Image (cartoon, rainbow, N blue to C red; front, side):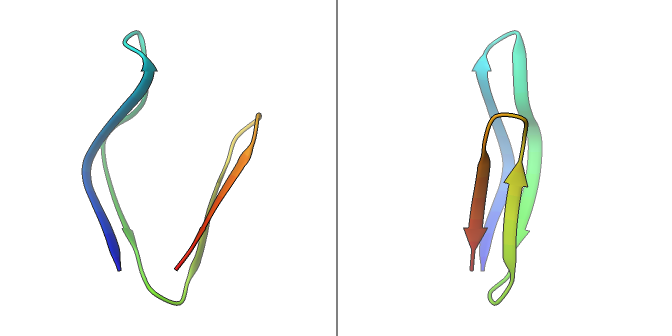
Amino acid sequence: MITIQNLNFSYSKSRPLFLHMDLELKQGHIYGECNSNCVIGLAS
């Protein structure tokens, strides 16, 4: 299992992408994230 707590990320200070994000990825599941520019996939 992968656990992320209180993640903050931005490409610039004026446009945060994630603010205080919590995420739990469980073994045996497939996860992905899509946006207009690319696809990022995670598998556990």
